[in-house]
Image 1: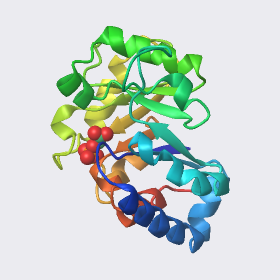
Image 2 (image 1 turned 45 degrees about the horizontal axis):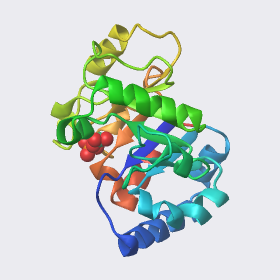
Image 3 (image 1 turned 180 degrees about the horizontal axis):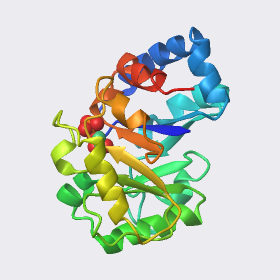
Length: 226
Ligand code: PGA
């Protein structure tokens, strides 16, 4: 089983999202092989668009049980007078997963290990699975999360994906927890995915740029072996 997680970041508007869904759905409907991988629990797709666009996916996720939705962030606060925040309570039942502590949030929004821990707690309290990102295995990571995504900044959006060997070396250093799902993100494309799919040590991928094009994203998913 592999997770293919589309991180759209702050891209796309309403019209562009509808077009993406149309093309992606059409691809699925004409491809029995990928549909059966989704049905057989071999492939799990999680789409993380900007939050205002989440509801446009309701038909798609109803039709395909192994396609689900994720948020790109969650408030560290419980509900209250926090204008502009997207709380776990408001995301509950809308998304199944949430990306927490992406390096872009650390860089542009000053997220610290303490904030990441609070966000993880909020996600879990609302039955949303936190997908916690890290850049170095020495980082202080919340040990109550089940998904950890290794996202080296040198590989994000640069076209310079980290080699499988390096990714596995990093995984070996992540010793604070015995059981977790290990995700890799950084310049995954239809051309680079192949080597990682061979490894049972990698449970899935966080895919940024290549997920913005429905055909490209689909071509990546279709390469997963049965
Ligand atoms: P990229 O982004 O696939 O465009 O490198 C990955 C990510 O930041 O999640």
